Amino acid sequence: MRFTSVKTLAAALLVTLSFLATGRADDPGKKIIGTVRTELIFGTKGAVEALGNGPVKLPAEEQERLRKIEKLEDFTKFVKLGSVEQPVLAGYKIWATPIKNSEAIMVTFQPQARIVEENKLRLDIEYWQKKKMALRWDRVFEVGKRVYLIGPKWREGNLIITVELVSLRHK
Image (cartoon, rainbow, N blue to C red; front, side, top):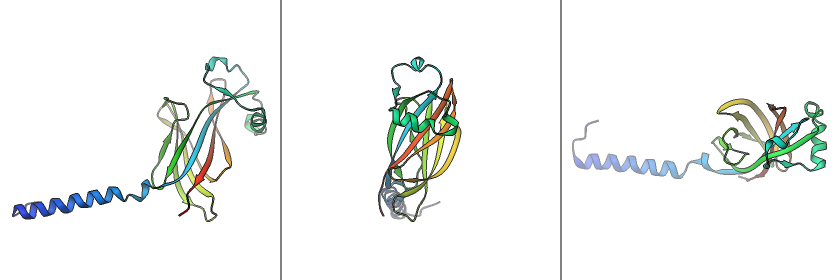
């Protein structure tokens, strides 16, 4: 593009800069629409001592709830490896790292559609292990209701990802 005068160049630059500045400030995709809590649980028949001091034993009632899930009924021990609470953005994928300071296991959330009913949201969820997507789920989540997603086999057991829509902001 060729400008015939300094005034034309300055005007074009001013228009471009103002467009960029207003475009970033009003990005509707960055609007926080809710909060999601993710926990990473490990179920096994074997020893959990090899996992170190980080894992936390789950309460007995939650362990019983997990044993009622068909794919997990053989496991005798369940421990929480970590948890994180993240905001859900209207138009962007967010990354959650349930194990602090570790990118070996990560979960992504991306909202798809707000359900007509007040407290529900459809989310695409991806489970990433060592920078490769391993599993994907598409679920409707309701505020306050935890969903157990059966993850991959790991060591001598199975990973379980729990997802709870903690809050959902109204329009």
